[in-house]
Length: 466
Image (cartoon, rainbow, N blue to C red; front, side, top):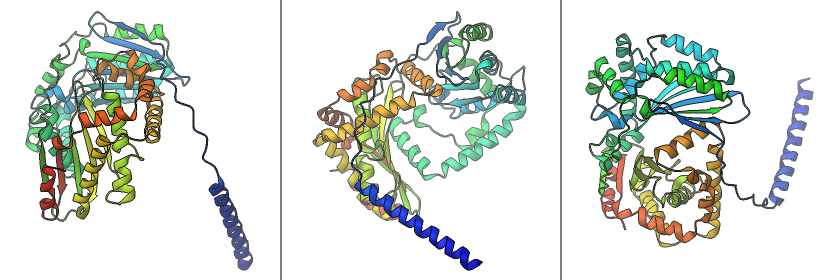
């Protein structure tokens, strides 16, 4: 019986191999598939906008066919508003999740779950986001729940110790992560003592925060005129509007949005090696201050970034990952805030290849500065950029994110509706021009976390890269 079974299995395996070989032969004979159509411009869904007497801005976007709604309150209060009290905004958000004067934290979680959704709070450099999701029929009730969390936080003193212990554990993990260590050195070099340069507190500072400081941060930074409420999905517009007026209409006007732009990044040429003895890899960040999305060159610079290191087929990735095997997951990005931005290339490089990989990164930057890309390479990058722009904005959350980003950077609707067309209007010469203007190797900051004994001498040459 076993012999028969083995014969059956052997026959099945042979048949599978034959099928696989046949499929492989067919695959090698396939022709290149026809080129896809040019992506169309993004179409903004119809939306209703209004403002309450206390200054709260509201945008309603009926969208999609799934009976769910996403509600997101974007408050212009984040780490920028902390001053020197790093993570005070984050600790305030954690305390806000601990219930309201009307509901316990368990009540909030249970009510959100009964609506088929959840409620979360997240802190960024400039904004705190309070976001709820629910089934469409519960949109007015989720508005009321979200408003209670925002307007009536209990900020219970008894929970502060536990939340600080959680934050201390997160801090300890972060400060021992080499990618984070490189980011700390890089941001400190760019921004100095500005809040954007202070990513983490020390343990003693975190432990020192009191309930009184958290309450003061909340009172000083939260209010109607700093808040934009977005709703996207399926909902009854009239019922939701009535719920917003009832839940938020009596909220304090609060402080105005800070009108001053962030302090300019320092942008000093700098090399910092953070020693990790016997490290098997070097965690590298190379970059410099650039422009923000409100500037005319920004879309072209986004394409240049994608071409250099912003997606899997980019030049730097192909060079130091695919061709030479120096690293596994390099990437570049344009990191932006209101009135501020920087470009950075990041990579975790095998220690003995650190200098060689940096040489190739500089080579690829200079190559794009000196020689316009081919039309074929540009077209492939344009297709990628246009495609992901449309894809990212095809969900409830995506619609809110793109509208909030435009609001943050002072962009009108044309920036969104004409984005794809502007991508395709770029020429190879445009890409070289913006790379030459904005990505200057002689002005770049280099932060490296690695084994100083093995890489230190070679790093010195990159203070004045060729």
